[in-house]
Amino acid sequence: MNNKALVFIDNDGQSYTIITCAPKTSDIYQKLDSLFNSGARFGDEKDQHLTISDFIEMVKNEEFLEIIKKIVDIKEDTQTLIKKLGSYVFNADNFLKMVQILIRFKTGIPVLIMGETGCGKTSLINAIVEINNYEMLTFNVHAGVNDNEIVQFMEKNNLLEKNIGYDKYMIMLKIYIIMIMKMIQILCQFQMYE
Image (cartoon, one colour):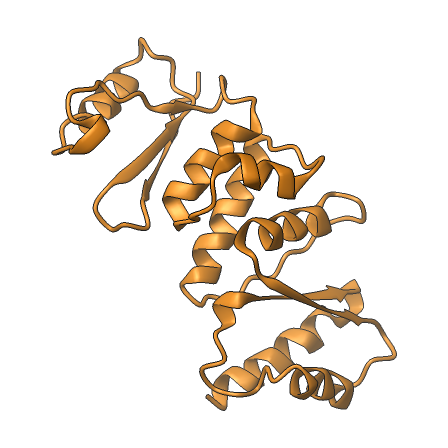
């Protein structure tokens, strides 16, 4: 039995979202349900008993997108987002990764995604770009790339300027494993210059 739960403070700063796999008859679920329904609610939710999102039952992209919209404040309607995503299919794993990346990205915390070839890194980033209307910049880093080429890429795209609005850019660096430490070192050097 999995009694784990995730609690997200929604982007409005006042409401929150709870997601769990705990069975509805479990003690933890009952406590979470009580917490979830204890706050003051207004509008459509005023007299409703709210239900906690259940990972086990979530199978439609619409369900995942509704939660993502609340947590990170995406204004577009769900059907528009589904059209933008095309054939992308959510599951509990990529949903959690997307939420964590979006929260970090919106708070200015850098994200490094690593994984085996074909595990879905690029698809996940493309989905994030689509639902947020970001501009994606891609730079392939391989053993032959030197520091100057990375700096030129960043200068060409005005990424070294202060206050450029990083919340509108998703910078994707396709990094081969032998270059990861060098790339981290370069990125850290630029962080120190701010």
